[in-house]
Length: 167
Image (cartoon, rainbow, N blue to C red; front, top):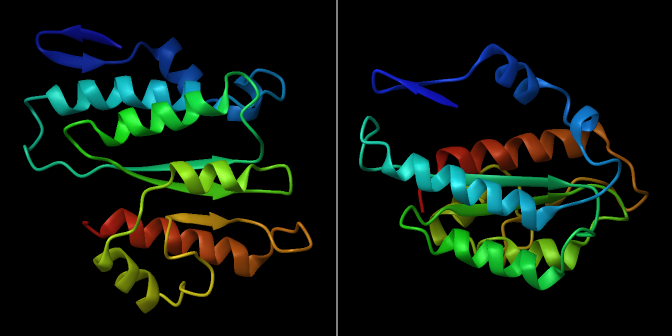
């Protein structure tokens, strides 16, 4: 990202890289959750310091993954998530697991605890049977390890509700 006359912009080459299919730019099957959370933390620090945005900012981070952390230690994932949650913006972390290789226990651990308001809105959207109300976590696959139309709709509703619901 470049700055000129107080404005931020991307070079076209950088924007093209950011818009590529994630599967084309990943590390060949490695799941780096801790690194992803560290990158989000740096972005949020810049976002919170941006004086051109309103003071009342709301941030929800959605982490979609089909694997287990295999670049750093699981403790690094937990620590990065805790660091993120401690930022002044107090972001909400919601996690979505895809497939039997996804580390559901770790994703539950780093997911935020839902507020009463979030639980109420998730219930209004008929998602209470799809989520564990102790965590903002959802499994994106069925017990048969399939991604069905119903699951896709559930995930869409989960993301939509949490995107629009303040703590």
